[in-house]
Image 1 (cartoon, rainbow, N blue to C red):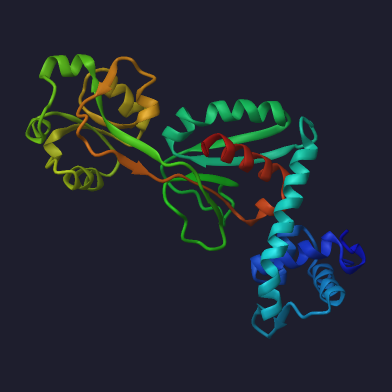
Image 2 (image 1 turned 90 degrees about the vertical axis):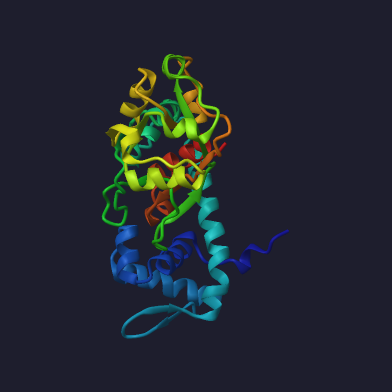
Length: 296
């Protein structure tokens, strides 16, 4: 049996240490937890006293983890994760999870993948207000432009919490009507004589095709759009070939694989949030549902 008397500190103190270590300063941690700096400082001092170790080296310019603090940090992160899971599990079907959560995602992700997950979220927490920013521009989570973002590249900011989800596989598709009209390509030369529907950055698009031995020019793209949903509609109506995720294309019977020999495009998907993820039940609940829905 565990000797509970040897774990005399309370969770508030543990959380104070965890958030301070992750935020890097008492002032930032106090803001994240909604506490005054003196209160937070007392909690950090309290856990140091309870454990009998010094967790931070206090200098005039910074708050640095000691060796003991560094060694213990991962254990406290495990505690934080467990506490969040307990809170979410206890909430269950509760309508007490309220507030506003902003999700930023690309136009395609917001259109094709989010709605089924949001249905589950509406059942779990019907009082939550969800705002969706559907844009290909990155939202700045540090400046609170969004609470959670779904991105296709790993964030470089170490202050953000990121979880990798399943990759998306993209291939070349076109409408059956278009291929009936111009013929089905059997070689890369055939492809280079066909029309394509452009999506976003032309230089990246041409580079992707060139890396697969398909040498296109801007002349192959008579129509460009920054919207994947517009691109999809143009493809469905026979404007040319385009790249789509397999699971999206297969829901449209009028589309077919245009060139089976095309090397599939693998796109990473990351779920990203700022550090409030560890202290806000509503953000954690949304994050976990998104992770479950997009992670398979």
